[in-house]
Every structure is written in C-alpha cells, then in structure tokens.
Amino acid sequence: MKESSYDLIIRNGQIVTEDGIFQGDIAVCEQKIVQIGSIPSGRKAKLEIDAFGLHVLPGLIDTHVHFNEPGRTDWEGFYTGSRSLAAGGVTTFFDMPLNSSPPTTSTYGFQVKKEAAIQKSILDFGLWGGLVPGNLDSLEHLKDLGVIGFKGFMSDSGIDEFLHVDDCTLFKGMQKIARLGSILALHAESDVITKQLADWYKSQGNRTARDYVASRPVISEIEAVGRAAAYAEITGCKLHIVHASSGKVIKYISEAKQRGVDITVETCPHYLSFTIEDLERLGGMAKCAPPLREREDVESLWEALKSGEIDIIGSDHSPSPPAMKVASDNGDFFSLWGGISGAQTTLNVMLEEGYWRRGIPLEVIVRVTATNPAKRFGLYPRKGTIAVGSDADLTLVDLQSSFVLKETDLLYRHQQSPYIGKSFRGIVTHTILRGRVVFQRGEIIDSNISGQIV
Image (tube, rainbow, N blue to C red):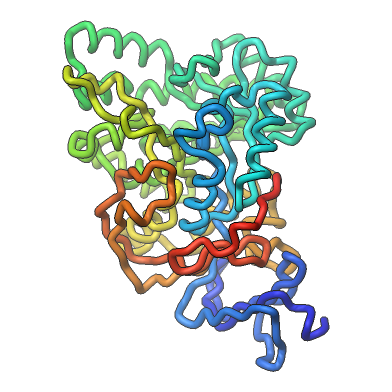
C-alpha cells in the first residue's frame, strides 16, 4: 500500500464492533476500509481525523423510514430526510413503500422513487416494495429491480393507495416472497380488533389520547404476530415484525423463533422512551401506531434488548405537516396523523436511555443499529461492521458531551419532534459514508455526495 493511496485515516479512536471495543486507527482507500490497527504516523492521507476521546461505530442502518417522495414531498423528502439521518450517525436507510404517490407497489412506482432518491439522497439507501391486495404479479418484477424486501399492513395503513392485506393475500404473498428468496416486513396489528374498538370508542364520544391507546391494545399486536408467524411457518417465508411496542409482543416472537420460524423483530426509540403519560402531555406529536404504552412495557423492551430478543432498532420516522398533528376543536385524537419524527435521534436515544441510564453495552447498540440490519437484509459484511474490505461507513461519537435537543437542531422538512427539550449524553461528531465526511460537528459537509442503492 503506497502512502499516498490512503484517502482517509482516523487515528486514536475507540473502535466499537458487535464483538468488542479496542483503540486503533482506520485507513480508507477507494471507499473501503483497508487497514485497522496501528498505522505509523509517517503514513499520510488526503484527510486525517484525530479521534482521540471519541468512539468509532459502524454507520447506522435505519431499516424503517417514510420519506414520502414522490407525491408527498411536502411531508418529507430524500433531500431533508437523508440529511437528518446523517446528523444522527446513519449512513444507510430503507425507505418504506406506502406514503409516496405512487406507492412502491409496481415497477413504475419503484423507478420513480429510485430516481428521486439517487438525485437527492446524500446517503446510501434501499427501497421497500409493497404487498397489497392485487399486486401479487408485481412482486417478482420488484424483486428483480432490487427492492430490499416487501412491506405489508395487517391493519389500516392510513394511506388510501396502500390497502392492508387480507389473510388470503397475506398467505399467497408469503408463498411468493418465499419462492423469491426475499423477506416480508409486517405492521402487525389486528384490523378486526383495532377497527371494532376504534368504532366503539368514537361512537361513545370517547376520543382522547387514552381512548386511542385503548383501541389498539397489546393483544391486537399479539394476535397479528401469531397469525403471521403461523403463515411464515407454513410457507417458509422470512418474516420481519416492525415496531413492536411491548416485551409481551417480543415474547411471542421469541417463541416462534424457538419453533424454527425465520422471524426477526424491530422496535423503535420512541417505544423505549415514552409512555402514555408522555402521549397525553405531547399530544399529536407523539401519536403513532401501535401507540405508546405503559412504563412497564417500556422497561420490558429494554429487558428484551438486554437478553438479545430484539434484533433491530429502526426509527419509523413518519413525519407529516404540522397541521396534521393538531386536534380539531372537538379534541378528536383519532383524527390526527399517526407518525413520529425520529430519524435524527435514534443513536442519541440509545446512548442516553440505553448506555448511560441502563448500562446497555455499546456492542449491543452497534448490533441492533448496524450489524443485525446488515446481516438480516444481505448487506453484511459490506456494511454494518468495521472490518477490512467493508464500506468505510463510520460514525464518530463523543460520549462525554451532552446537549439539549432544540428545534433548530433538526434537519427535517418540518422541525417537529417529541424529543425537543430532552437532554442527551453522546454527540455525533462525524458521519462518514464510504470514506467521505457527510456530517461534521453540526454541519452537512459534502452535499454533492450521491447516495447509492444497496
């Protein structure tokens, strides 16, 4: 290796992988990590970063964002969305298929979304395809085009163009996805339970935040998970349950794993942070589906994370214009858009609530935010780890520094978040995509970088 051939050297950092932490240097050439260890001071690079006192993590992979482009770019878009992720230490994201118009349920929908992402994203990305009634014949075409997997809803998605799957569509879709060697991600809430309860509460004039939560009980997730796991067991389809809101749900997924079902589960930072009391305090800003739960549910998720039962943390960043988060004069909480803006703060939450408050090892945080996503979706070891030959996707963090999140810190299209005003320990100082710094100490650095589809 010629001295002049290094593009980047990161020196003196505490390097974190899923297997351990060690001090060392990292050399990068042509977008790849080419050396890890002690690199002589005589070796030079086009750019050197002194990471003394910092921890170097694999760039986060956010498997679950809604950037809504094309068609609803006024809600969010690849330009603002990817920059907010970069500010949070994310280097790769997977965009969900439903909020764009057209949705990513056809080859045309995929192509227009891919073009928009290539033009505007500064991070690497994957695109989810959709499973909806009537598009079974499109699944193979979408797989050939390169979708990272397929997403379906077992209850109303809130988007008219993206209908939830009936049992027949779900079963047949899983059969086909299994034959394609792909994976199905499911929003697992029972449509029967949630719809009947919501109709009843509203008919009684009960439309508060607590009524909304009561209309989507944990048992509605458990019922849907059980049904989906049974179909996966029969069809052999790889299954990924998104945004589980309670350790009670995780328990049933763990039981399915023990039966040999190829199933994984993700939860989100907001389920690890907020409770029903916070929902009442914050209002529509904290509305999501499944809803926030009781304190015991929050702690049960942390216990499941400690025990290795939670595979992935995804932000489920689902923004909307502010007006869609404000209740009308009659205080109808049911009518508000359900989605939390959280793409920029995933690592902050994991460090503050996990590492500092509950002693969750950094290796575990790396596992659920980078390594496991890369392994589950076929990107490992290209991404999700710090190893020779891997993409130089890196996040540098100052664990000892703290900050209070302000509205002006957010790079979203709409600067709203339930985390505004919260204190966090652990600041992202650099985000590096394939060896190029995209974010540094509060600023987007190289906005000319184009993301690549993975």
